[in-house]
Amino acid sequence: MRFLIIFFLLFQSTLVNAFELNGEIIQGALIIGKEHPNNSVYINKQKIKLSENGIFVFGINFNQTGNIVIESSDKNNQITSKTYQIKKRQYKIQKIDGLHEKMVTPDQESLEIIKKENDLIKNAQLINSDFEFFLSGFSKPVDGVVTGVYGSQRILNGKPRSPHLGVDFAAPKGTEVKSPADGYVTLAEKGFYFTGGSIILDHGHGVSTIYAHLDEILLRKGDLIKKGQVIGKVGSTGRATGPHLHFGMNWFDVKIDPELILK
Ligand SMILES: [Zn+2]
Image (tube, rainbow, N blue to C red):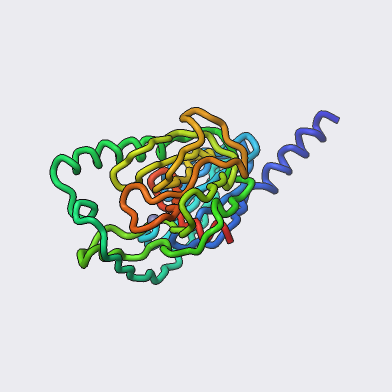
């Protein structure tokens, strides 16, 4: 009997030797995978978190090209490897005029403030928690019309600036913003230079979402938030020409296209 059980366990471990993926390997994608929890998973040689249920997740940046190599190694160091070619996307060009010049070309003093704020944002996005909130999927955080898409090259007051790596939903000032998934608040700040009233929620394994230009913030850093909970209200704080929600999604510092996830 004991022999049979051991045999079965061995048999099972060879059966689940190949990991499964959920999602297309395309720029801006967030891919969820499943593997035997005793194995180790590497994305382009970088070891990533594998939960006790065998869940892992990784993202593909907007400008990432070439291949993604996923390797899984079992307890006998037997390696299974698969290579995927990243599908490239075409991005739009978006021109925005009428911005205050200090929002396009900030002075030295403002640049120092912006750097400090960017560090706070980055540190929140680099948190690698054990939460698995991302597994529930993400609902649309606000009722609004999409006015800015992921990846678009930005020309602000005629000057080329960094690409837009989130999605903008236009909505009247005061419209409720609802959490698209359960999350843990890692940043809640009222007056950031570019992003204005800003929230970052951690959904686990490096997956986070950011909400910008908020008029009101209805939570605190350290709160646990439920999917559908009102977390803030739409505004036009920071670099904005009118009331809208900027909604971004990250896998650590990799920028994900929220529209690929909300679909
Ligand atoms: Zn935006």
